Amino acid sequence: MSKSVNGFSKLNKLEKIDWLVSRFLNNDQKLKQVLLQYWNSNEILQNLHDDFIENTLTNFYLPFGVAPNFVINEKKYTIPMVIEESSVVAAASLVSKFWSTRGGFKANVISTVKIGQVHFMYEGDKTELENYFNSKKENLYKVTEAITKNMRKRGGGILTIKLRDKTAELENYYQLHVTFETADSMGANFINSCLEVIAKEFQKEDIQIVMSILSNYVPECLVHAEVSCIVEDLYAENSIELAQKFVQAIQIANAEPHRAVTHNKGIMNGVDAVVIATGNDFRAIEAGVHAFAARSGKYKSLTNASIENGIFKFWIDIPLAVGTVGGLTSLHPLSKLSLQLLGNPSAIELMEIIAVAGLAQNFAALRALTTAGIQKGHMKMHLTNIIKQLGASEKEKKFLIDYFEHKTITHNAVVEAYNKLVQEK
Ligand code: MEV
Picture 1 (tube, rainbow, N blue to C red):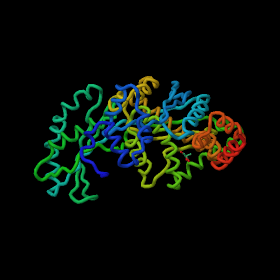
Picture 2: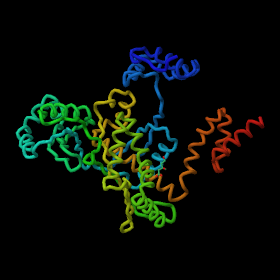
Picture 3: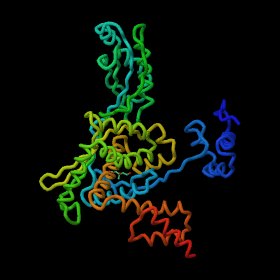
Picture 4: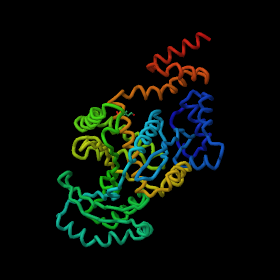
């Protein structure tokens, strides 16, 4: 049976599943059932999800949880998080509570400018190109007016269009570097539509347009979040030594990219979870954040900490191009609900919330790493996953959780305890 197919997208969902199961899954009907069991019984809802992408077969669940007790700029939030890693929501919840009694988080957006570029090749005289650009510039704004009309009403639109000479990097390469304000939308479609119209207007015989696309590198779409307290309030004992270790952990991330990547990955545990819950594009965020972390030419920590005059301060600066209107935000019922849960924030407020979620995760990770280590808490959370993998009953699960209350949890230890329990039955 051929494993290639023509016109797959034209098949209906069941036909697609049957084709897949027969060609790639040994016609195992149990596996077909696995796919079918995730269909939503509400046909309208299922159709909505089917239409998000091409060739949808079923739904892929991820847990949707919440971390309560966040205080950001003196406002209380319960933050929705979508993530599979067992310890992330627990960590966020612990940290939110901790800082809620120490003044909460403070956050502010530094700027919200987004970028798009028309990349083109030009072999001619540079001054002629500059003159051409200057003669065209007004028109480049004009031709986008129909597209930018609604955005301008919401306070957004095109901010600047600049000609950039990139020939030092690549022979004959120039670009139109365009900056945008996209109000409460992430603005990808808006930016790309503007760019394509601009490119068409700008094109002429000796200008070869290569492509027109937004940039996910958004160092000017930046948010700052921080916490601070007197050092003695940080730990039950040895506050000064432990706070210093905390600061050293960040210095190490700044000195050593291997550590910085893991350090920032922990931050993204919090960031991505909220980005996904609110229907935003986590790949765009990831790409932009890591480029920002490497902006000095060396990959470094997104967070920083200081101890000055007895005050511990911990902060993050992170680029986040997110939206609260458009895209999936209002289409996915759970994203819509997430935004409602957050009080229908503006894009600016959502940037602040997401930055705080990232900072909170990093706080939890560094506090654990520089004291007891993370495995104790991590394995405690992971214990239920191991128990489930073993196929334990609810009664056995309860027994094993009690059994490991004060014991070191390792995969082997849990398997051994489970096997012993089954044998003793
Ligand atoms: C695990 O998902 C994240 C951490 O490794 C982050 C860190 O090491 O800072 C705990």
